[in-house]
Image (cartoon, rainbow, N blue to C red; front, side, top):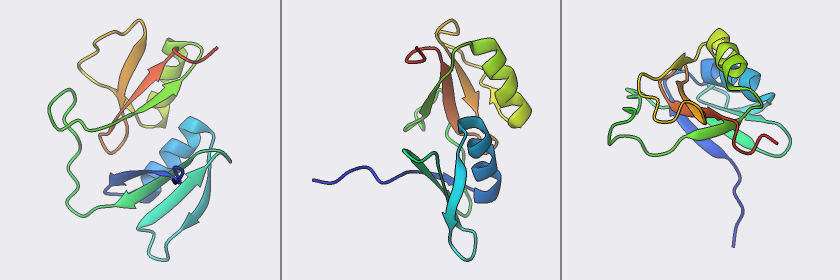
Length: 120
């Protein structure tokens, strides 16, 4: 069988999202296509690929357009939310269990969760 090479995220501006996730997750750029349409970032173990999609439409949280999201483990939710907001994220309006995780939206509108689950 194979192994997961990267998680790819469609977006309108790969550079903006690469900078956002690199800062949020402590990753660095490891490559990009000549036109900047795909930018890969990594922490040495995990790789995210940010891919330009023309006419990108952000998922509708918590609507039926939701397909997948990233969970980011943190030790303390409130400071992590503030840090993500300083990077350009915003909290989603719908928060199903805010004591366990906070649903955030990245600069392109993709949901991701900050959670203390798995942070120990």
